[in-house]
Image (cartoon, rainbow, N blue to C red; front, side, top):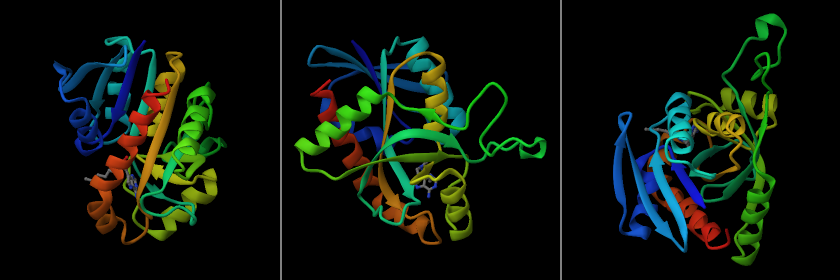
Length: 228
Ligand SMILES: CCCCCCN(CO)Cc1c[nH]c2c(N)ncnc12
């Protein structure tokens, strides 16, 4: 079984590379892909760089070039749901693109013809995440993620995304990974640890908690591998 583990920023996969210790590095399309094996599974690890376009390229490459049969995304996100605090873990049930907008033609936000507002994650992977959380007594929220090519750091935009998509968290890659995995028929999950509240203090909070929240998400992904 070949499993891809993807992040957007180097901080999101560094904890993984440190854990696995030894790996091959393959340069491709202005990026680096790290391959290793773990408990009989082949792993390919990469961070895409920030944003939906970078994430789409990396997710496609992980599947089409490296043959990933499942894709696990690990990273950090901004909280939209007021009950989510810094350090909390969220596993996505479905994801939407909050900045995809052809509402001028009467379509809902996040929708384009022949598409859908939401893409659902793999139910088996999501329930595995819940099982691991239960076993480790870690609170894990199942929720909706709204993805867009903006770092959200003001209350008005935060509330608009929260309300428009009923979203619990926001980030900049998940929904594009979802579209790619869905189109290529690869089961995927998106796990995010909260780094900020997507409000006026989000930049400072993100800077302070990126590393610790990224580590938390990565450690949880490793715990999932043990149960895969
Ligand atoms: C150099 C700074 C790069 C920020 C990248 C943020 N990632 C994008 O996936 C996650 C994220 C954490 N908090 C967020 C927020 N409030 N809005 C959007 N995205 C996020």
